[in-house]
Length: 414
Image (tube, rainbow, N blue to C red; front, side):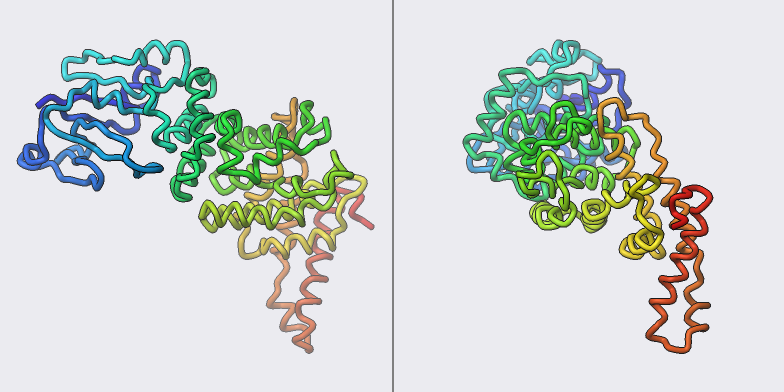
């Protein structure tokens, strides 16, 4: 029995990156042999075991054969006669198909080290096309390693996977898992660009893909389409280190622009109202978590209003209070703070604007503080007609917001 460290840990060590988890391949062993040594089985589809002390994963060397559609359409073979090279051959990318023995020697049958040095994402073999998850994983690695390119022959295989319908067999749960993980990488816009280049974005996130065909004002992006602007917004959200709900909201905030009347392009008046339906289709299809769905819905509806303060056409205090009430800022202040962050990313999502201050945030923070400081209980006790409490509370909030912002934004005096 021989044990080799494999996969991401070796890759990250060679790149000088921090290693989070270590995986091992066991060659020349049977499940019974590992069980006798105290390993605990955890694999459902193939033999994977947890080390009795370190709890790291040890998998028996295996091969796989395509036997159906999608991620689960494989038959696995794990036995003592499976060699290390056979196991490495089934992996997705050359940079993930490197192993290290107990003596420290590297086993690199597919030249992964050369691709690491050249910063290239390249498939191991033709079997890459058999598993649609590999396409998503590659796009996610493009988001992690932002300066890596996709090998031309690998891009061709990815296009084949889209053309032959293989990506259509991905489960919503797996799509969400990979997309959400990619959004949390350092360069999430790269994931979206790679998916679009191979045609997968149109199949997996058609609401987002459609935005690349929608003209946009050139002050949003010189390429003149909403999709290009969106990539900058997603990149800004990553630079700001926003949490997943905010990054998802940044991705989806402009979905309504694909539905605005073409005769108005490159302007998109009213796209906030149009965006709810495509957003909800996307969230339902991906089974997006509630926190992501709720913040994205709020961003679609309100991001234009949030931007519209402090200028010549600024919202009135009454309109600001209406927005704060819609956003339930009293009970969900943290969600409103996330909305402001998404709007800041939107404002910075233009070429040359990445480090631009976002003064609207201070205006809204002051407004929200004044709004929340109004004592609803005191107002309720002072109003004889209980039916008038909401009206009186709203009026008090308007007065408080106007007073708080008059010194900061003189235009709010009227």
